[in-house]
Image (cartoon, rainbow over all chains, first blue to last red; front, side):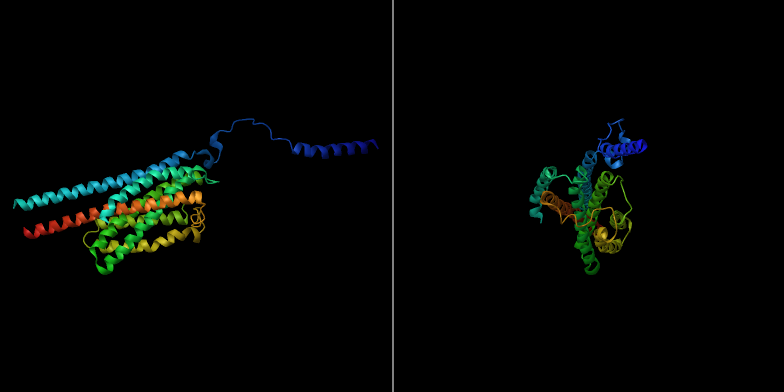
Length: 89
Length: 220
């Protein structure tokens, strides 16, 4: 009889204790996780990529404008040289 | 067009001054956050590239079938701009992808086909530069091939499984995101028009120089 009572008490305690342990808050942070261990998508700050993307567009436009200006200057210089050659004759 | 060029430059300049303010005020996308704002320059740069390819394709067809030399000048100018805007898309895309996907590049259908499209127009310019006499016709054929390839690049995200966002993203944008996007798209298309005019001016001067050389040789 006493064994039966002990078993009932123990199983009741387990059944009651399980939900109580289940709703316990997570344990406090036991260590700081270095950022390198996180997935790459969570490690990288977005701003440098965003700034680099916008800056590249502007650098590309400026560089292209510079190449047009340089080529136009060369063509104009060639035209002037040719016209001078023609008028000298 | 020459009369409208000055005001157009002012409008484009003003639009690119206003654009960052509109982009800054646009809401963050829920999963990508700040990096999604690359979208406001990345997609319009592809739109400008597709516009350049359309101009280059039509002009190349006119040159091939009608032997129109003015069309050839349009074709070479637009091809150069297709490479410039394509390069913008190919650089801004991986900068977005590095944060959003965790990698710079994926050999999936959209990214690979976009790279190949860029290479087709690089090939066009190389043929023009080093192909020798008659290379204009060969280059025009290359441009037509590139123009025919473009719809496959655009719809690749819907046809094949890819990590790249689908074409349905743009039409379903909420007004907060859609208005800055439309504004940037118009700004990039107008920038393309301005740069095309500048490049056409250079092509016309180069043609005038060639004619001067010919006249000079004939007279001597």
